[in-house]
Every structure is written in structure tokens, then in C-alpha cells.
Image (cartoon, rainbow, N blue to C red; front, side, top):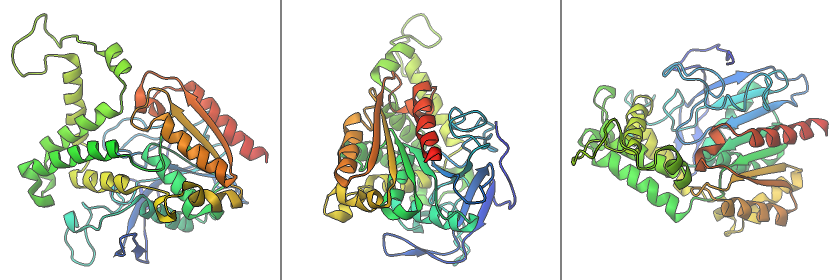
Length: 379
């Protein structure tokens, strides 16, 4: 595990507060935005070794160091760390909590400096593009003019792709894993189930709850429904099948009789201990709005054209058992990149673990990422 650098304490980890308002895609703006982040390694004198890692929906800035709230290891220590593909001995690694999050970056649970009250549902609706805009402000603060690479999986991959579209001159390479260039109707449908579960919880109180009386039941159900989409039928069958939980026969009731039921309930319960319900609403909505081609008359090739002109290189990785962001979605990205003339590598990897494969032990993924980044350094 790595020891992140800490200079300013604000909630969890290292934080900078922006002096200027952040304009949002909605036309609104946010004042006093705080960005919680961690860095590992040292920025090279020529600034050529910076890598930005973007986290998924329920992730945070603790990519390669223990989470101070849960005590759990960094969420991508399999990929990031000494001797790993993204190595602080070679790279200056940056990871920040996204705008709208609940791990120190400004979100609905933060204090509104203009009113002195918690934002709650008065927080403006945000987009993936807004998250990237805030990350760019963080890089300005850190003195990073150009990134060697932006790397992310799932929603992190959406941010990485958005970097190429929004700031092509600042990105030498993009690694997007188990991701997509838009949210499908099925993705939106699952998110809506989760949001409705939260808002149906009486403790949600139209978003005006306290930390001591949060809508834990609704958030737990939202997490359970979402977690199913992160797995594959093969993985669930191999791990749980129809095996009973701590019993030899059916109980003819509604306790968690099957192991898979107990597993999902545990996932829901532990999630409520580290995540905020309103943040879940805002971040899932940002993902649902995501459609990189929409501002370009639906032409994804046009969205990537500036990055291709800038010479940005891309590595797109998918998993064959991922039905949430399937290989067909990755291939749509690859075809658009080829159409734009961008240098692009693509690989579909085999895994029984579904969408979660990018967070689990995936040696082949590590080899691909390492080879791609080493190729950048040699140019």
C-alpha cells in the first residue's frame, strides 16, 4: 500500500478549494468547490509523467492507499502501486473524488458557502463533463499542463473519454476499461430503480435528512439492484448457485435463505456505511445524461476528431461477460476512433466476473495497461 501525500486537511484526505466559480453544463455555476484528492510519486521536471485515474460510481480518491473511513485497501491496488503497471516510481499519479461525491469533494452533502446550509437537493444537477472540468481545475492547481494518460474503468472510463473530447491538447493517451460512450436505456432503467428506492424511503425526507437519520434502507436496496448488474450469471452460479445460507433445508419464510440473498444484503448494508444517498442520486443522473456524441449531432467520430488531430492515443478494453457495458459498446467507441483517424488499441478479455472484472485480479488487463503506458514513455 502507498502513503499518499497530505498537505491540507478538509474532511477526508488532501483538498484544494477553488477560488473561481465552476460553470456547469446546466448553465448554473458552483462557488467554493472543494476537490479531495491524493497524489503518489513525483512530477517529472518536464511534466511528462502525470497520470490521472478516474474512479467509478461508488469509488473515491483512495485508489492505492487505505480508505480512512473503512480501513479497506485502495480500490485499484492491483493496478496502481510499486512494481504495478501504474507505478509511483515512474509516474506522478493523481486521483480525485468526483464532483457530487461524498468523500470530500463538493456534493449535495457539502455546505453551501452562500447559504451556510447543506446543499441537499438544492445542489445543481451535474454531468460527467462537469466532473472533468473540475479535474482540469485540479491539474491547474498542481501545475500539470498535460497528462501522459487518463485511466478509468466504468464511469471512470466515461471521464477518460470525456477528457479526450473536452481537453484533447492536454491528454497524450486514454485508457478506457469496461466503459461506454453513452448510457443505454437498460443502464438508465437500472439507475431509476435505485433512485426510486432511495426516494421511497421515508427517511429520505425530500433529501433533507441528517447523517444520523439517513435513508439507509432505500440506499441499500439501490446498491443491491446495482450490484447485480456488476456480476455475471456465470459468476453468480459458480459462487453461490442455489446453496442455502446457514441451513440444511428451506425455512419457508422471507429471511435470507439463499447465499446469494445474504451476499446482496451484506453488500447493501456495508454500502450505507460509506456512501451518501443524495450523492448516489446525483452521480447516477450524471451517468444517465452521458452521451459523448450528443453535442455533435450524434456523431461519435466528430467528438473524437480533435483528439485524433492532437495525436491522442487510445486503449479500449472490455470483458466478454460484462453485460452492463458490453463489448459492443466498446466496439462502437473503437469504430468511431478509427473513423476519426486516432491511434487505437482494443482488446476483449475473458472473465467470469462480469463488469466487476476490471476491479478484480486481471493479470492480462495489467499486462495490456503496462505495455500501453510503456509504449507512451518510449515515444
